[in-house]
Amino acid sequence: VNVEAVNDAPVAVPDTNAALHGTEDEILRIRIDTILKDNDYDIDDRWEDLRIVGITPLTDEDGNPIDPFDYDGNGGPWQAGSNLSARVAGDYLEIISRTDFYGFAGFSYILEDPSGARSLAPIELYFDPVNDAPRGSGDVEKNVRFGRTTSITVAELMASVHDIEGEAISFAGLHPALDGDAAANGTAVIDGT
Image (cartoon, rainbow, N blue to C red):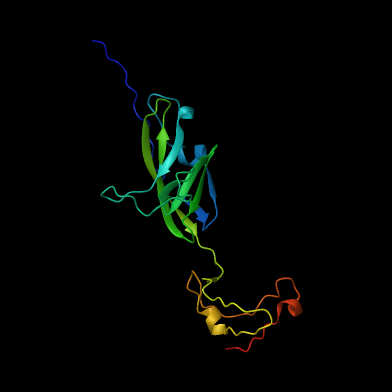
């Protein structure tokens, strides 16, 4: 009897104790060999020959992707995870959260052996929040002819402003004229309305 060997896929073991934390809107770099690949193995190949080639989003019980997010959105080097994107960069996996996202996120990393056999393992992490500055929509726009006067109330300015975290915001004032010369650019008078 002649039994021919076949290549078995590597075994990617879920990293449940990694305790990874990132910060909203900042790239988190994870060293591949010490965190993700640390407990993975392959019966046919050496551990050093295994590599992580990408990620996929976590999936629900029906196999549907959970909250996929592709940072560059165009098939570039970033791959979609759940509320995050990641790319392999040398010995690191670089991870960024969905814009303004904080909370739990995750992905399944793709482990590949030299023969191309693959397996997946999930990993979850947490993104800590940051306090974002208030944002305006740019909807308040008025054209003024040279030498003319117009009024824009504080209420009009504030109508299009919001805070992503839902915190209360207030009007603090205007910045100086564009070139620092209010006489050349006109003047602003704040009357509190």
